[in-house]
Image (tube, rainbow, N blue to C red; front, side, top):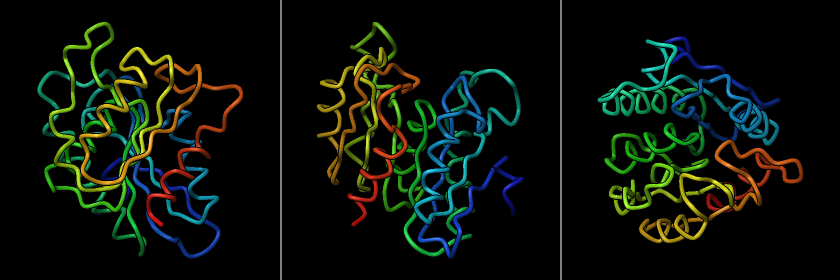
Length: 205
């Protein structure tokens, strides 16, 4: 198995990797998402092997995930984590943006994907305008330290809702607030990749 099997792109550090990072995209995105590219660049600059990859649904079709694809996409997360973990010694960090982060967190919650830390960007707590439809039922099963990087104007969940959800995780957590950012985590003033990597490294130390 190689990176082509997961439609993965590697960002390699200058020297021997300190560990491995495995990141995937949101429901409307792909491995080419600018946010993923910047985050992987940041991890590689810190000495880590970072891989951004496409979920199974994206490998099959250009549109968003079809209904009922969650199980297949979670299996794709496990495949990607196992593959990238075999390429470097050291800790393994996995996660992704929105839907990709949710699929990764679910695979970790079930014990199918083994990681040392989760890094979740714009975790979709609920559909916009539907706060009663929370996607938090699996969080209490997550045993890995978890970083949530979240915009204060994200319609998929407020910072207050996110902080409440983070308390469900029995491991250490950190919430990185991106002031004014929406679901895409765009910010003209804050270094989003740097802040997220800093937080993950703190939880790993």
